[in-house]
Image (cartoon, rainbow over all chains, first blue to last red; front, side):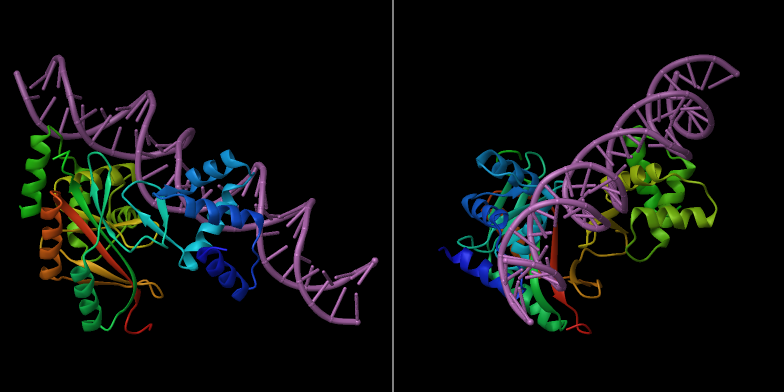
Length: 141
Length: 141
DNA sequence: CTGATCCTTGCGACTGAGTCTCATTATATT
DNA sequence: AATATAATGAGACTCAGTCGCAAGGATCAG
């Protein structure tokens, strides 16, 4: 049993929700996929594997996974929300190329620290943040 | 003639576009409004003032104003994009309260500087950025 | 075992922000 | 003033995401 299974199971138990085959399939697929994906891509992946699944269930379960802290949701500039799993992927922010659409991950502890200082100064309790820098990537500039 | 009129006029002239009464009304209203607003709010404000205007024209003109650098568009967590005019409003980022929805503006030159350093390091040409910190504001925590 | 309760699913209808089409009208240019 | 080109409004359309609901499980009490 993987770590993410344990976490999801306790999360569900705590809320008196059930671990169904659909939810397990979604969890597994999310953790097998090591890149950004959107909800409908996830539907397609699961359908091509084996199982029938409805879009509604995928959307509902992604919400649960976000609430459980196993998945993060982002808007990378396109219309659709994209998701990625959290375990094994440290927090990061994005440089987004407005020409080719590429999203480059970066992580800067100092920026995070300064963000925390801003919050302290304004008596704001930070929970999450999203920092996106839009521009031109190396190959498009 | 205000500064924003001049800028918008030259922007339009350069692109061989025309300054119509509708565009003027939108520009004026945007610069009279000293808070965030969304496209449909803007439609309502203009309609309650005097003029007939269509949603399509407002959406189209807001895009132009953004391209002209007179207006910025943001997603503050809700479904709708919100806008604000730029002149007289320095760049800032937001703390967004997930309980009451309030958006608190802040500005930290040091964070901006570090962002620039990240971009330099990765050979990325930054054009704009969006930093949003989600959590609980002073009165909701 | 039986029934009551409650959660989940899939389907398709629905929502709502934003975009597009197109016939008509207005602006800028010569 | 004539011409060329752009803009407008109305409503149809798109598309991601949500919702309602009937049917299908689990789970628990007795």
